[in-house]
Structure formats: C-alpha cells, structure tokens
Image: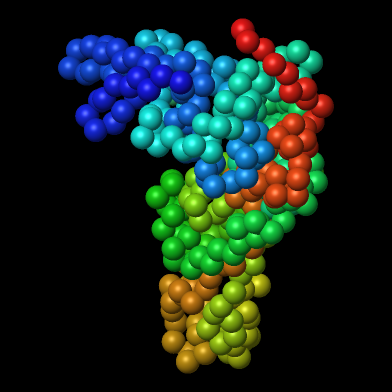
Length: 347
Ligand SMILES: [Zn+2]
C-alpha cells in the first residue's frame, strides 16, 4: 500500500484534497477512496480493541452506510461531512492497524436484502432486545425487526439507573418549552412491542403533557437517558410534608388529605392543579398557605433502563460478545439484520 498523504494544518489525509471557496468560507474536501475513507471512520465508530470479527461487521455496516448516504451533501459540493451528522471521519492520524485490517479483509463486502443495499444502522448496546425501525423512526424495513439479543445482556450500559430531582426535571422541561409547572408525576402510557417507551405522560401543577420518545430523550439528554427502554418511579418527600388539612365552608374541623393523591376540581369539573384553586387549603398549623404545600424539592425520580442508543439494527457490544464466543462477522450481521445476504461487489 502506498504511503501517500496530505496535510491540512496538523491533520494528515489520504489521497487528495480540494479547496472549495464560497464567499468568505473555504470548504476543504478530501477526495478519498471508499476504503481509505473507512480507515478514518471505523475506529471512531467502534473501539479498535474490539475483536476482529466485530470490527469486520462494523466495517461492512459503515461501508453500506457510506454508499447509501453518498449524496447527503451533494448540494454543498461534496458527499459526506466528517461529523456525527454523517459518520465521524478523522483522517490518517486516527487510523488503527486492527480496523484497517478489518476493512482490508472485508474489501468489497456489502449487506443486501432482496438485492438492495440495506440501511445498516447500529447502536452501542441493545440491553437484551433490539427494536423495530418503524417504531422508532416510522420507516418500516423488513431487516430492521426486533430480535432477542442475549449477547448484549452484560455489557456496560446493558442496564442503568438515572436519578433526577424534581427541580432538575422542571428545569430541563422548561428549557425544552414544556411547562407543566412543578412536576408531580410521570407515567408510561405506551411502549413498543419490544418494551421501549413511546409515550410518557408528565403531570404537573399546571397540567399535563404527553411526550413522544424522541422528545423525552432530547429533554433529558441522550447521555443521561441512555435509551427509551425504561421504567420510572417517584421517591422522596413522603409523609407529613405532603399532608394538608382542608376546611369546607360548613365545618370547622379540618380534614386531612394526602397531596400525592389529591385531585383539584374546578367549577367546570375540569381537573386542574393551580395554586389559586387550593387557596382554601391550610397546613397543620392552621396557617393558610398558597404555594408552600407544593414543595417538592425533596422529591426525585428513579429511572431504570436497559441499553444505550436507539436499539435498532446491530448492537456493537453484542457484536463484541458474539465475536468473543467465536461467531464470524457474517453470523453477527445476520443475527442483527433479519434475512440479509453478505455479498461481494466490486462496483
Ligand atoms: Zn453530514
């Protein structure tokens, strides 16, 4: 193999470089052979220390992705950008021997379904079950169907716990434009057949809102809420703090209610929970309070989840485990992509 490269600043690139001037902006384009491009992509997508058969599976998935998305930036005068928007591409200095070897040894190999290149999406770890693409993005592909994935059951992040305080949750909701007041509870309304959350109801002092799965991950942050396969429960601030004493117009003796279970009904019989409506609520010291009873600072939510990423297609940690157990790249790809063929094509 020739050792020909070019430098842009400190970074070295293979093949050749072209500069595209557009007003004040200069776009630097690396014209690079497909496999030379993959040399700079695969080590950014999967740890180069993973076993060779997992790296080969990743190399072929990335090759498929590249060909299917080759016109993504065609209007801007190039094929693919070098960020996560397309695939992270870092040039020559990030190449690793192991990933280069995986690319060389799978040269010209692609994944097909019924003669068509598949959209070979992948994620970090499924947590035990992969997901149906139609339930995540709405596009139905016969090869992106849920499969049981025992190989992803003991990887990092195959299960995880996120603890988030009520006030932190409020902050993140409000900054995402969702204002239900102070959050009183969260409830899973719908899941996919594989068990991932599709709809989550957030109840607050100002009302409630139903959030879709992509919105939930955007609000909580995809590094915190590692996947949408989770359950949620509320903890903290129990007992006295949540007990209120209520007087009606005819009785001087106060009734005790638990605010965690209280529903406030207004004159139109619509359920609301604004502080104005509970102005008749007094606390146990017989002093009337308007806002203090909704003191949820001690409250927090425990979110217990499985897997990391969208869960569709190949699980990278599952691929690692399969390779360790002696499976080939072909067996790995056929486990995660239903009904596919791995074929050679020199175009
Ligand atoms: Zn891009």
